[in-house]
Amino acid sequence: MTALKQAIKEKARQLGFVLAGVTSSEPLQNYNIFENWLEQNKHGSMQYLAEERSRIRRADPKQILPECKSILVLALPYQPVTFNLQPSTLRISSYALGDDYHDIIPRRLKQIIEFIEEQIGHPIPNRYYTDTGPILERELAQRAGLGWIGKNSMLINPQAGSTFFLAEILLGIELEPDDPFPTDHCGTCTRCLSACPTQCILPDRTIDARRCISYLTIELKDEIPENLRPQMGDWIFGCDICQQVCPWNRFSLPADPAFEPKIPLPVLISDLTLSPVEFNQRFKKSPIKRAKRRGYLRNLSVAIGNNGNEKDIPSSNKPRRMMSRWSNLMHNGQ
Image 1 (tube, rainbow, N blue to C red):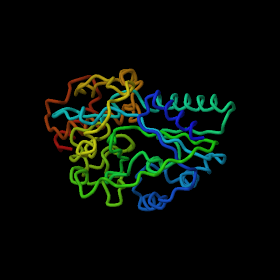
Image 2: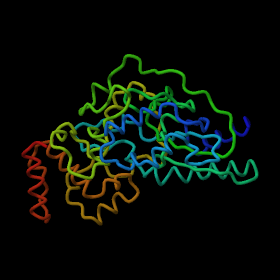
Image 3: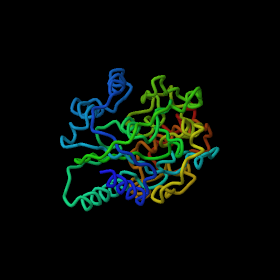
Image 4: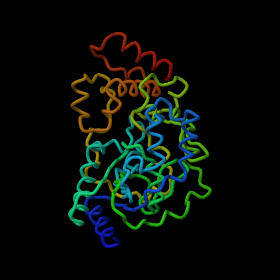
């Protein structure tokens, strides 16, 4: 199967995946870290992570695919975070500047499965995911040799930094596993911990999601806690700070064409007046649609409040209640 594995990796490379590795279907050795994280409620309102069925499946890949014998782990690069070093702008995380990876990557994973089945001459049991399935992607990636889990909780590769999406294919065929990534190259560096505005990075290389700007601007559906609003700065969707300061991201690779910026930049204050139809049209293919219009306007309001310039409130035909809310955010500096 060595020749087949190399052919699979070459096919993945042709499809744009810059890293590829194989690991076994054995249960995850560090699953207890995830369990402890849940028990401390560090997942915030993401209750789907704590569901019993989900927890059982995350601990053992064979609970997802009983026939699983190997797992192919892949990485596809998005826009390097240095692109997003723009002062005095409303900022969007680099990964969200292009098309939604949920729409792009699965099609390529399916092509890899079709290629494997062509090579061996028959269908094989499989499951594939990219940030959608009940698996711990970064531990599988480390086990497949793609990199180490850094102090900011990101998977880091010494030749590609951390600006890439991970994807996995559970396969019902035996492939020779690659060696796990052997070393931790964070050393004594603590730049990510020092730079995080909300101090959400924990000593065990996990994140307190309840304080993370990415969680607050994307996953959280309620109001953003007032005490955290000032620390959010200009971020309106996601956050790149811990990656921007990471020295390893000087090796970030160019983005796959699908993830090159598609939305108009810079984001304008006038987005506060986007109608539902305008929002849906502008972000139809973007990850930003995950926040929905309500969340996007909430995030914009906080960022405008942090800038503290009342002139930034656009005049419009919006209901007075919404305009009053924006004005309150401005005056409170929140």
